[in-house]
Image 1 (tube, rainbow, N blue to C red):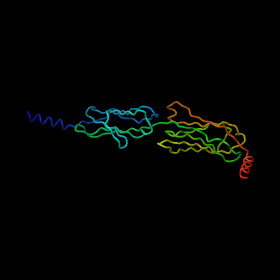
Image 2: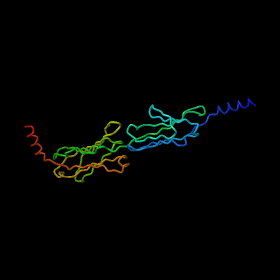
Image 3: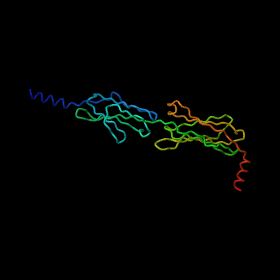
Image 4: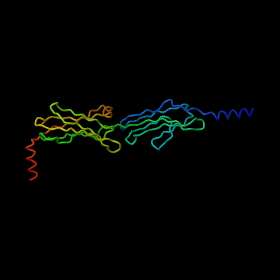
Amino acid sequence: MLLILILFVQLINGIKINNKFIEEPDDVETIIGSTLIFRCRTEPIHQSQITWCKNDFCTLGEHHFQIVNVSLEDIGMYQCQIRAGQQTAGAMSRKAKLTVLQIPTSLLIDSPVILIEHVLSFIVCRANNAMPEAKISWHFPKSISYISKNDYALLSGQALRNSISNLTLIANRSYHGILIQCQAHSSAIQTLNKTMITQQYIQTICKLFYLFLISIISF
């Protein structure tokens, strides 16, 4: 009887429990200052050891992982791991990405907008320090025609982006006093239900007057 009991205990100890995820973490987009929860549940619950990792830093957890007052430093990939143990069949993991949204801290048109008649000119709008980068659109009367519109983004600190939109045009006298608007669009702006728009009035200078001013300054 004792031999049978020993064999039974050894058999039980030799059984490996197959872990499985019954709730997995999803990629999250959220705004600065919010609270979020990465969800991760495994089965069987009590026999599983959960570890949460970001980059090379790991910590023990009880399934779900909460971040309070989200900041830009929290951006990254998070991993929920089931650690292998005496009664578990092996380690498993699931990953989720955190993207922190920030609206541009500033939106402006380089000013003053002074265009020289019949001379190649530029109008520039900038949306600074955003995540993700803002898309820029222009609003002005159809009477203004431009040669090209170039959009690009530059890295700012802490994974933020500066967006720049550059209009190239040849102005004429009729552009003087016309209002132009620059608008920024992003998922962060949409999430906060905001509108970001800025505007400037065009000033057009006659080419002859411009040359006259240059000659005076040079003199």
